[in-house]
Image (cartoon, rainbow, N blue to C red; front, side, top):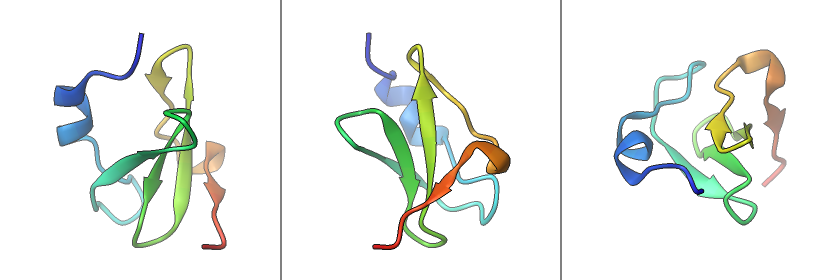
Length: 57
């Protein structure tokens, strides 16, 4: 089951407080400002800075 659209509308990057968007075939949430990608595990977004990776693009 994918992440709910209503949830996506309210989620924000915990680092810089900007909106995130789905990436990697709905397997992550990316912040375009700081380029962090937060994983989605078992259909639950893991919005922890320590769990995020930084996308070079």
